[in-house]
Amino acid sequence: MRLGLQSVSLAVVTLLVLVSSSLPPAPFPLPPATVQTTQERQAEVIRLNDEGQQLANRGRNPEALEKYQQALTIARAIQDRQSEGTILNNIGAMHDNLGQYPQALEFLQQALTISKELGDRAGESNTLNNIGEVHRSLDQYPQTLEFYQQALAISKELGDRPGEGITLDNIGAVYSSLGQYPQALEFLQQALAISKELGNRSGEGTRLNNIGGVYANLEQYPQALEFYQKALAISKEVGNRLGEGTTLNNIGQVYDSLGQYLQALEVYQQALAIRKEVGDRPGEGTTLNNIGLVYARLGQNSRALEFLQQALVIRKAVGDRAGESRTLKNIEAVNRRLGRSSKALFFSRS
Image 1 (spheres, rainbow, N blue to C red):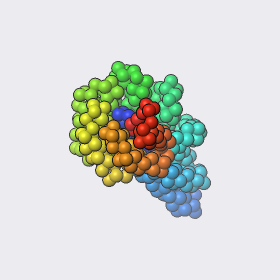
Image 2: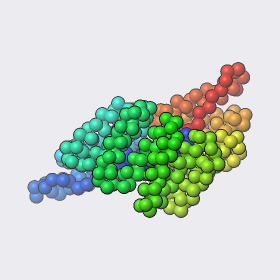
Image 3: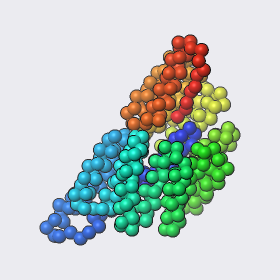
């Protein structure tokens, strides 16, 4: 997957199906004279794909994209269609992360064509999920739901309960974005039930976190904190430091919303330390942005600009265009405040 990557949108964290972690062996018989060379090139494809995924997990999307492009060139040279499809899927995911949506859809459609050609239903479901995710990035929610529903149908057909849970989680996130919170909770609860059924504690933590995000959006902060604390406990139990950092950031947002700024800063600093530790650059940018906003609310504008500028540097570096835009607006708002502007100020978290 990028089956373990999490994205933050305000207080909701979504587990995305974006990348396969490993590639299959070459799917065709090889003449003896070329076995060694082709096997070596296949091993190079796997190595480059794995390196790309590691970079993607750390938010180093441009570098990940370069690794995937190298892997794609070799996969095509040795006519390994299965690996080619997987890598095209991964490249599409990177373009989505970089906000390059037409390119993302182009590569994902190529991946989808190969999956259908090979009869790879699991790969087809994975790519349909990712195409849905691109449409979600574009706020095209009807198309998003259409692709997620196709992916869900295939997961059910294959008896792929983990994939089914991930897609249910993604559908819940769409309904949350639409403000249709009862539907969001319905799908997230189904996803949570599957995680519990499978004994997937890490997935359970993610779903609890996402349910907490819905309650935060409903401004039902005690319930939000309850679910976030459960998610945090599981992340610590299973050693999921990435998830721990994400949930701590979300808890900080709740305290910020409640006007409990000192508590928010304390929790944000914990989140920031973990995100630096695990190399979660996009998450680091998010938390730096949020810390800057707390200082702005406290009237410490110079301190706010310090953190917002750090967030801006990171968001540019990782290609987070939406986050970059929000941070630029926040910097502009603080600068207006410092200039004693009479205009109303708007701050945007995440």
